[in-house]
Length: 205
View 1 (tube, helix red, strand yellow):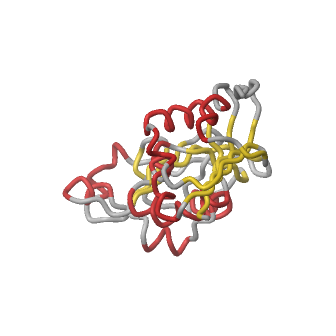
View 2 (spheres, one colour):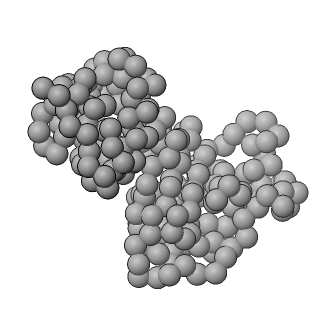
């Protein structure tokens, strides 16, 4: 049976049940970026906690580098995030580059031109959409929970990711469902051939 592509602007739920060891194969998606929806008018710290469940304690202890719209960010408690922004989070990175970009580090003053300054407040009370990118240890720590709860991602981006991985991406896949209906893994790319969005759930079986 030939799978039908998504209608324009449609949102479907793709649920993949994998063997536990296979779940990390989808972690690279977190680095490519997924969509996080949350309240406007929040600081970066507040938005990450409410939209992605990343606690202030974790941000303080483990997240060493944060980029907001491509610029290094030092103070997560004062900078606000607006609709359409891109947030990238990383644990400690090696070498001088890592030291230069580390939040509140010794070299922070030396990168003033590439640092993000706290802006004015975003519109409060309205839902905003932010592209969130998680790298290295942050992706490994937060990945299983985020994927099990479901991440929102453009269908075309997910289709491209799956096709780039090849058939091995399905090794260890126990079951695949689209909107609750069982589907063969080979049919999944065809379903994603559209301009909509996908709620991707990846869980260990």
